[in-house]
Length: 225
Ligand code: FPP
Image 1 (cartoon, rainbow, N blue to C red):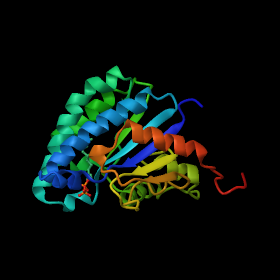
Image 2: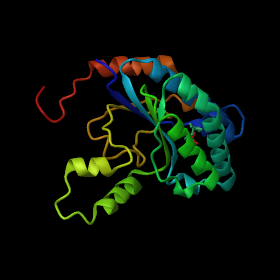
Image 3: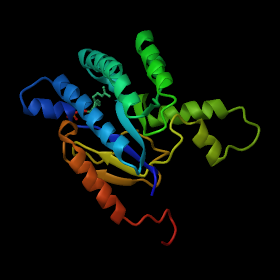
Image 4: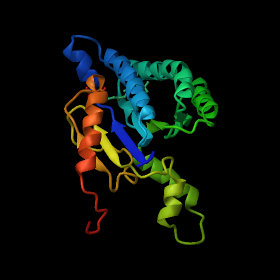
């Protein structure tokens, strides 16, 4: 197997991780951002992993308290500024998904800059889902296709989405068993893994175990073996 897997992760549990230690919720996001780096570097070094898509900020996350939203925006900015070198060093291409028009002009500019500066990288593709919601993504895709004269095919819709690639492994940390408007089209035959581990405690060892469990699952894609 060579560079084929697409892993998607719902990184849940940052707030609870911080609260458990008597710290403010945002401390959990800060620690969560460090884990994003560790897991991204692990995936970049793994020969079978082609894509890693991480749910960093959803279309629903705007409902959080203003200060938490502002903190997440600043953290994202800091992360992207720091990560530029890490992406290049590890040959990682950054391909954000989601509608970034809702972000400040400077953050939009930074997101586009990191994307452009890593365009030549041909190793792991790391996608951060930013102001991402699956309904929003599908609606935007349908609206770009609505004047098509012919019937819309599976391939046409797939290609009009922000994320054009089916997911193989979907992991959700933090103990909840739901999809939360993440990659609904792309998860159609994904193998689902739910762990109680809070995202700031997630590590390479747990990911290795999931990858190992994945090899034991029989994927039939609706067929018979
Ligand atoms: C869920 O934890 C996590 C988020 C809403 C955002 C994910 C953000 C990060 C991992 C850090 C920032 C990432 C980057 C790339 C800079 P929660 O707050 O819902 O946790 P809870 O369920 O314990 O409240």
